[in-house]
Length: 257
Image: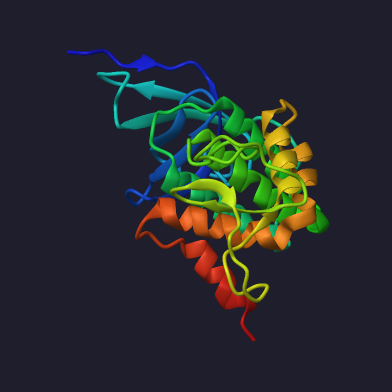
């Protein structure tokens, strides 16, 4: 009979939780070391459980798992959890966008595929979202980072088909299948595909290549936030397939008069 083992402590955020029994929870976690992990927290719903006040979204946590049988177990057993420090989540207007980020990770990432740099970008994004003036730039920067890490975002400084350099001052499209290409629409402004100036694309590509992550990428997004919002919505929808993001639908409903 296989003996239970214990994984070393990992850094994580709770993306989502739901009831497993009267006293336990199933958690969808984003860990720095292992990517997305599903775990069961036995007894976490009991009034005096030490896990109960800790297992909240948007808190940086240090977790210890116990595992039986195999390192590839589909559901892990959570043994310990404690707050790993950092600023408190601001909530308010950032709350629903925060759950939007969590839903993106759950829908687009496969389990047990580590992306440490993406984990760090998520942590930076949560911090930036505390400032209402930076919220939209933070969301666009994270969407771009997520798509790039998952292999869904081509190099933005060259045209995808022929590798010709993007030129500042010229308009370009970003197509889900064809990648970056010079915009061909000559009709009424706003009636055709979303276009971006070549300088914006080059600035975003440069920011994506740097190690400081989200802050520089946010600055690169600032000149074209509305265009990027529409463009990235199309790209994300394409890669989600038939799935609908519940948080995005809810945000749209709340904005209706």
